Amino acid sequence: MNTPYTFDHNAFAGPLRSAYAHLGDGEESGDVVRVAGRLMLMRTQGKLAFATLRDSSGEIQLFALAAVTEGFEGFAKLHLGDWVGVSGEVVRTKRGELSVKVGTWVRLAEAQHNFGDKWAGISDFDLRYRHREADLWANPASRDSLVRRSQVVRSLRERCWAANFTEVETPMLNAIATGAAARPFRTFHHALDSELFLRIAPELWLKRLVVGGFERVFELGRVFRNEGLSPRHNPEFTMLELYAAYWNYLDMMSFTEELVAGVAQDVLGTTEVQYQGRPFSFAAPWPRRTMAELTSAAVGEEVSVHTSRARLVELLSAREVDVPDSWGPGRCLAELFEVTCEDSLWDPVFVTDFPVEVSPLARRREDDPELTERFESYAAGRELSNGFSELIDPVDQRARFEEQARLAAAGDDEAMTIDEDYIKALEWGLPPTAGLGVGVDRLSMLIADESNIREVIAFPTLKPRRD
RNA sequence: GCGCCGGUAGCUCAAUUGGCAGAGCAUUUGACUCUUAAUCAACAGGUUCCGGGUUCAAGUCCCGGCCGGCGCACCA
Image (cartoon, rainbow, N blue to C red; front, side, top):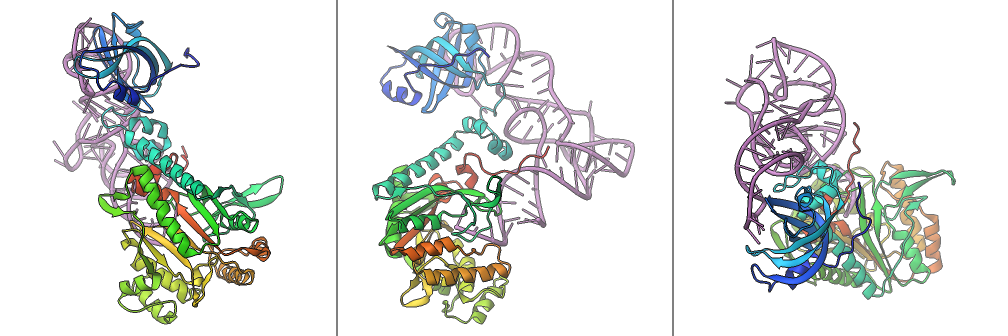
């Protein structure tokens, strides 16, 4: 294919539209511009041709005339999907469409494959996700959702920077996968002759940086969890984790609601959003409710981490949840909360006071050691963030890890393993610290009004083709 | 992993009870000096996801497999 290696262009569709909004029907501006992009439509009419050019800023019409356009015949035979560069005068046609009147043009790349129906686009999910490049230019909505995601990521970063958090990067390849309850991906390093795991969370590394004197750190990056796929789960997803020395979970809740409301403001220009046809508001402050309080209201009787395990098991059984012997009252309460409350938490809310049993890295409440200073925020029926005052006591941390190890031995393949290096880090001294994790894909779904996580991931995980 | 639904031309979709596999767009050819999903005419385009089976006859019915969507489970 004989095409140029560069094209100097000096104008974009969107800005041209606003800059020449004043141009009257049939008027010629006298200004010559160079634009480039992909041909989306072509309407030939004898010695005239009209084409729609799309670039990253929008679309503009190309107007070619046999009498004016060099190589007019070739222009009229360009394919939909071809990339072209054009030099020509900015004019408005008699019918009122702002156009670049093509003087000279060059094909920058040929589209050898046909694309979607120009009206219906591409709707086959398999094709859309496996060939996202075609989806992106056939379906503007696909592009919009990924742009929204990009804006969310940018806003999160800028707001963390603005709050004096230092962005860091921690290992994705780890000898042990810890920091969350999840099955890891396993891999192997040949030179080290060692099995390694893809990280399920950066949590413990980040707190070690706090031990080392980074008082405010954050990491925005990918984590990997070897779990099922669903419209809300991708095996690799992006998490924002941040840690602030001298804060507790109350401080972190305040930061969280301001952060998320700020992102909505940055990206959408408002904190009032419409999700799947239903409105809610990200505006701070968000209500704060304890897990016991919400669960009690849902089951119609007072329950807490101090309720007898037998009663909690009864309540769970009535909701068709089988309770393994290894679950204590705390795990039972958390489970009861999930089945009775989670889906109904539409407006943003903080759920607090998680049982210590399900929070192996969180600090105990001073007034009730069975509970932790932990919160999760929910919106649109889904968990959006998770945060807590960090457990800083190495003795307690060891005990928590050992309890996890017991669960693992009992067959829980998501239980954490003991991390001696982390305990040693705590022995060096972790100051009072609060941490936060935000699911960036989930947040992007809310901001982009998408119900499927794959719409906010450029190349979601798919089953490999076995032809 | 389990259940339900789906897979037909490059794309979007039809095809009655099991009875000759079609249309629009795209591609190719032609007409057309202001189009807007331009219009008009013509040509071409198929392993009906793959493999078996039932039948005179299978896109359609049955079995197995592949891929996807949704739900469940797991989780964020």
